[in-house]
Length: 186
Image (cartoon, rainbow, N blue to C red; front, side):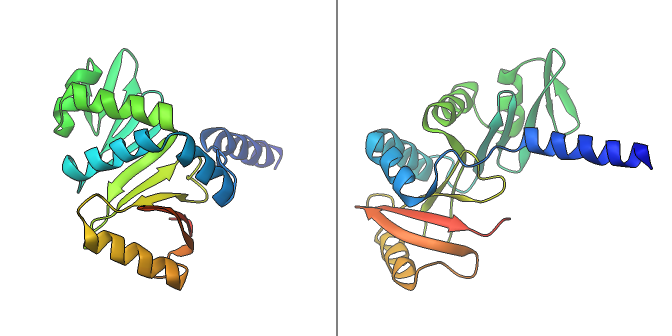
């Protein structure tokens, strides 16, 4: 019985260490982060909409990433992509279908802007940016790309309703093409 309690305690500690709490506490802090770095966030969102778009990129921490539906994990002296072992991040980028330069650019952006994941939602095409700490309570920004009036209309309508579908707890406009959201846990 003592081993069971010890194991459960270790499991709770490991889970706590592997998941961050939200970096920004609510609408006001996310809005401030956006205002302080709006050009960089807009560049990231526009680049995503023009480039990888339908994929997902996630930054889980140094050496742990997701590109599309494939995970890249630091492993010994190299990286593991699914069951495949490679010797460098450059090789891992090629295995997941991108270039080393593109993957490196998204890793640097994630570190600088506190991104957890970025993806584009169909059918309207808005870009969703989950911020660091979204493991337990997804939250962040949604952006209607320039020239995508469908995305702008959809987000404006969703925000008037207060949320999108049944997954959002909160959806509020921030400014221009930007919206703040909080969702239920995945």
